[in-house]
Image (tube, rainbow, N blue to C red; front, side):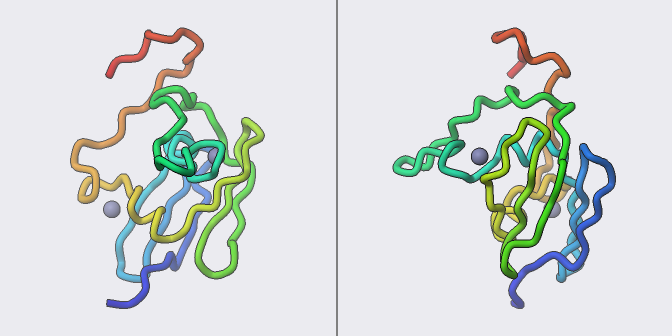
Length: 122
Ligand SMILES: [Zn+2]
Ligand SMILES: [Zn+2]
């Protein structure tokens, strides 16, 4: 099995990034979803590995401002909320793949207005 890496990263819109993999797999990643799964030390507890971001707390309107290749193993995104410390390794990106095959239940898009805690359906 060859090392999995993206062959194409398409900036579909500020809200969506498409990734085509070297094994032919394809995933379309909403910005809010990637942001919600940010692996940096601010977003994930270093010791427990627990996510600190409350699901549904990232607005669907969150945008990707910039994406850059890190070394040859990861992508770094700058988000419209100013966050940019997450390094998304290709392994992580593939694990997060939201395509119907990897995530049969699909993604539930958060409400535009997430200002009211408790208004989110789980
Ligand atoms: Zn983060
Ligand atoms: Zn997939």
